Figure (tube, rainbow, N blue to C red):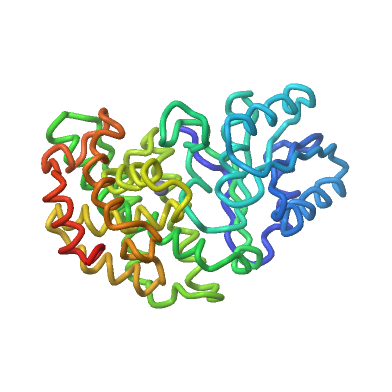
Length: 345
Ligand SMILES: [Zn+2]
C-alpha cells in the first residue's frame, strides 16, 4: 500500500508547498495542472512559490475532466519529464492530474480548493470518457495540502456535498461487510473502521458545518482525507463506495449534469440506510444540518429519475456486491423506499 507522506490541513498552508516538495526530494522541476478559476485562486501562487525555490515549473489549465484532458496532460509530462505533478483545484482538476501522472509513473501532490469529495486524497480517479461510469485506480497522492483559507472561500455547496460523500461511508462499509459474508470478499477491518470513523465525526460535528465556519470545514476536510487514506489501505474504493454510490452513478446516467457527486451519494445513503434498517433518520438529519440535499427536489431531479436510478443501481457495477443484490428493487418497491425516506413525496 502507498500512503500520503505529508498531509497538511489549515490556514495558509499553501505557503508550505515549496518546503514539502523539498522534503519529498522534488527540488528541480514540477508540472502544475489547474483550472481556469483555480489558476487565480491558488495555481498562480503555487507556481510562484516553486519558481522562488529555483524550480522549473510548467502548467496546463484544464477546463474539464475528460480522457482528452488526461491525454493532453500526459503529452506535456512526456515532453517535460517533471519530477512531480501538482493538481490544484476542485475534484475534477485533481482527478485529471492524478490519473495522468499515474499513467506516466510520476508522483502526484493534491492541492484541493474545495472539499467536495474524497477524491482529494484517494488513489482512485473519475473522469469522463472511461469505459465505466465510476472511479478507476490511479495512485495515492504523495502529499495533500488543504489550505482552509482558500477552501472556505469556495461556494459552500461544495463542502455540503463533501458531507454527503462522507456519510456515504455508513452504508459503503455495511455493503463491504455484506460482500465479505456473502461472497467471501476481502474485508479490511482497519480501512473499514477509518472510513466509518470519518462518517461518525461528520455526524457528531454537523452543527458546526456551516458556511464560512473554519472549524466545520476542517472536520469535513479531515474526514475526506481519512476516507482517501482508507481507500489507499484497502487498495480499492470499497470502504468508501457502496450501494449509495451506485445510486449516484445511476443518476449520473439518467439525469446527467444535475447535482454534485456527494449530494447524490448523501441522498442515496439515506435510502440504503433504510434498507439496512439502520439510522437513516440520523443520516438525514446530519445532511439537513450541514445544508446538503435530502430530497429529489433539492437535487434538482425528477421523482421518476430517483426511482429509475434505484432500480438500475444494482446493475451499474455487477462485481460490487451490495444490499441491492439482497433486496432487489422493483419500480414499486423503489418508489416506496424513496417515499418512506422522504426523498420523494
Ligand atoms: Zn464518493
